[in-house]
Length: 569
Image (cartoon, rainbow, N blue to C red; front, top):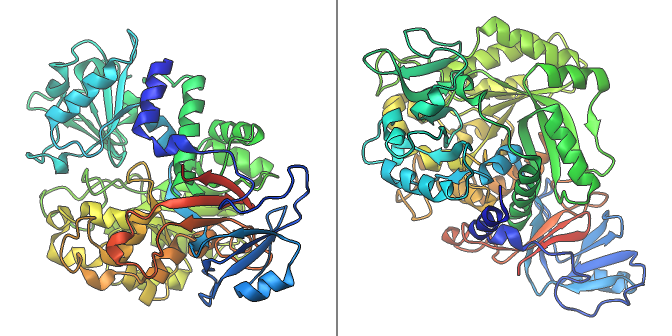
């Protein structure tokens, strides 16, 4: 891709492009001479919410030049006790630990930034318009790629077809991932590239090819069927990949994310991350999950967990899938979809295969996180974990169900009983609430996105966004968790408001609880003696301001290891 395109991306993500070099001091106070070795830094005149187990607060914090916290306490007492420390007056601003997204796709975000941005398009016509704009930056022979369409946002809430794209792009292959990543929309040129004939009445394991009355592929492929086209899409150039990754990382720190759990990456992606760390261009911590129980897991089992000496990269966990997504009706349900009789979703593999894969992960001593959205998918995963965990008493545990989106009354207590973490994404509820009751009906929906029921059952939660499925901004997740409303305040009182979390619970889900779910609670997730100085300075006190102010709260600064990695321009 050319420089013109990268400049366009920079304009689209302006804030993300404004990351600056760390200033010597944060608020313009007197700084030491440039060559003076700074041993200790004292942040003072602040509202510091430590997010420790006692939810304590402080007004000053001391850390050393290695980024290790040494003390927190009262402003006057700390100023008196450490007279020689470099002082930074925070002007009464609010400080919280660095935010951690416990379920996201950093590599997926990077790839998406190089493609047409289709999020929030409200019709097929708008999708075509955005694709035409993006095509201007392509060369002859390039595929036209995009992500973010959602038929639930269109006037006619039905899947589109190949003919919708053929009219505008008869010759160039077009492949567009749905917003959840669990469905793809192709034109005829792209379908013709598939590595086998898509016509007939056959279906791939764990996938579905939508076909017309003549048995021809209509253009939409669900889950396991997507690979039939996706495997033929040319790889992104290394130059564009690195530029897109840098933009994604900058966007993260500009929104206060000092950590992310990257769900399902290959060995080559890990190598890319290590290269950027070596280049000094990786301003966040990353906890990586392998892409399934195949080649990357074999490599990990043979070589052991990845713990980069920089403290920026860890890999000791495995991502598996049991079903698809609710929006594309691929989530596996115990009974048919309420709005699609005869369809109960897709189970990607038999239960015994899931047990076998989990067994392989635990035998290597690693943590497993399994994508499960439908109530049947969640039950199969819980059954498999219950069957396998007992055989590996020395495994460190903290196994996770990723999403845990639709459960049953009987299965909710099993999370605490099995000591399984529910890694959930609050904005999924506020994105899906407009249509998900049509999918599930009035009874099943009571056990969907059931954060409060899980916490009250003593289950552990870790919160995230699933970006790029949802927006990167963790403030949107915190807001969704405490209101169950969209940013316009709909519905009044919240959608099934009995499931809301307190502000403290929501922020803890993005800090200490997220750190715990990655075995990192002794170093990050709260601001305490001996931990890393990872923190963010907020424009607004999100614990005291009206909840309507939370989504628009800006990050003034992001600090990692006691150094500023982002400062608001």
